[in-house]
Image (cartoon, rainbow, N blue to C red):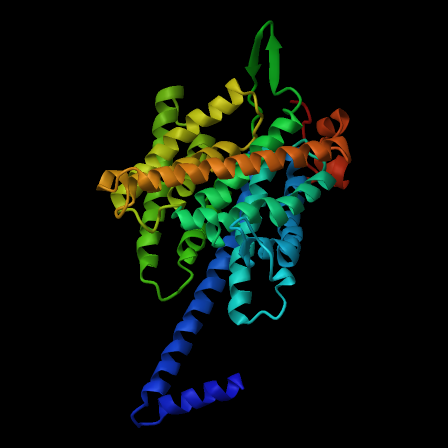
Length: 436
C-alpha cells in the first residue's frame, strides 16, 4: 500500500499537470516525514558513537590493566540497556502518564509504527549515555556482574522515571521546566548515580593516605592521554546529534543555531578549564582541559535552543572553571574517588547548565527581564531529580553490596580487572606494572 502511494506521488511529480491541493499536501507531508526520519536516525547514530568516546576517555584516564573491563562495560551497558529500555524503560518514560510520575503503557513497544520506532531509536541512545556515565566514576574496582545488574536498573527504572517527569509529559514538564537535550535528564541523572555508586563502593586501593588526622589524596595517573583526547573529540562530534537531534525534526531551522551554541559552549569550556589550571597549578593541565570541553558541552545542553551565542560562551566558560574546582572538591574534601571526573562533568555541570536556562534564556531568563520564575522552576526540577536519583541509587547499590557484592577483592583489584574478571590482557606482550 505504501509502495503504491509513493509510486502515485512520484507519477504526479513527473506529470506536467497542476497538482490538486490535497495531492500537494500529501507530497509535502511525505517529504517532511522522510527528512525527519533521516535526521533523527542519523542523530541517533551520532549519539550511539558517543559510546566509543566514553570508552576511550575512561580507558585513557585509568590504568592499562583495566582497559578490557572498561570496553566490556561500555559494550554491555548499551547492549543490556537497549533490551531493558525496549521491554520496560521506554514505557516508564513515554507511556501514558500516571499522575505525572511514570508511564504505564507501550511495554515492548508492540504495534509500533515507523514514527514510534524512530523515536525509540533516538531515545535509547540517550538512556545508554546516562548509564555509561556511572561506569567512569566506579572504574577499576567494580565487579562486572554487579555492573550489569545496576545498569539494568538505571536504564529500566531510575533514568526513565525522572525522564518521564521532564520529557514524558510529567509533572515537571507541566510546570514549564526546560531541559532541551538533557543537562538534567541525562547528565545530572548519570552524575548523581555515579556519585552514590562511587561513595558506596569506596576508593581504589592507595588512593587516599591517612597521615594523623589528615587524609591526603594521591594521584593515580591514567595510562593513555592521547586515547582520552580522541574520546573527547568523539564525544564532541556525537554531541551534535545529541543537541541538534533534540529538535526532533530535520526541517527545524534552529538546528543551525543549536550547532553554533553547542560549539561555542564546548570551546569556551575548554578555555575556562585551561586558564584555570594554568593559574592554579602553574601549568595547563591536559586531563582537566579535556574535561573542561565536556563540561562546556554538558552545560550548554539544556539551553542550546534558547540562548544567544554570547550566552553560550558564558555558560561554557563558567562550566570549564567549575569543573576544575569540583573535581578537587570531590577528591580532596569529600574523598570520593572518581577516576575520570564524571561526577563533576555530568552532575555538577549538569546542574549549572540547567540553572543557566533561567538566567540566559533570551525569552524568559533573569538576565533578559524574565524575572526569577523560570529560574525557580529550574531549581525545583534539579532538586527533585537529585533526591530521586540519589535515594534510588543508594538503595540499589547498598542492596547489591549486601547480596551479590559490589566490589572485587583486593587481590583482583591489584591484579587488574582484565585478568581477574575476564581472563585476558588488553596489551598482550607489553609489561604492565600493577602497583599503585
